[in-house]
Image (cartoon, rainbow, N blue to C red; front, side):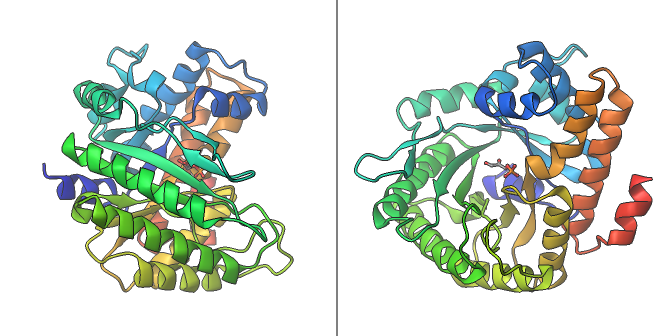
Length: 338
Ligand code: 13P
């Protein structure tokens, strides 16, 4: 398969990406919220339960894994990447080493992980990965994001993407403008515009073939502390407008992060975007919390109740699959959950 074909399969209509690549530190927070001990066997148990669910075949085009997970053997027999492939989804891997303090800027970050990346990519390819993820993080307040943060993170994303294509995998380019803060929707629109422009500027300089990439952006939404709430219709209009103006048309797929929106909000907003999507982009989800929150709650109640955990996950995957076609509704949400 060419990189373009892989990218299109990851974002195929009706399907999206499961972001199950929480680092050991991040999954610790998720497990703490449900009173589950953060042990390797518990992490594997939760994840293999999701990866072996019936929703995988119909609604999941790709799964993003963490370094530990891609090397694990499931208790069902196959390795984790084999289990994912068996269900028809493509295994992927988060390759960045996290957002670290950015020297010269107070309270901003630069995503690290370029040293030794070429060698790690070869190892991940051999383990079955066919796409990768690298997440840059931008904060909004009166002073941020700084030009320094916008430029340095775009440069790192482009160097990453170029190495990934050299290794014959599809890079997910994830510049996440955080929703934390009291800023309004217009500010999110402006900052996302600046961030996307700089990213595509650097991707071009680094000779990245955009046809073999997937963009993972934030939606255009007001800050979580903003008093002026926006409707899904407004969020959808502004998000699509921002993407059409700032993402080159060669990019085949755009898969949003949920970024702290609730499960229902993230499904509803994605649905509204697809209802009005008149672009050539395949627009879908690449959710972590937006796909896993309910399943995680079930796992917290009883870790070996596979049926209930999978039921919760199957439902969310199905709802988001519908949203990727603009066919989700609140009624279907209730009927399917019953
Ligand atoms: P959320 O959907 O929980 O924001 O996670 C997506 C992700 O992979 C962030 O990098």
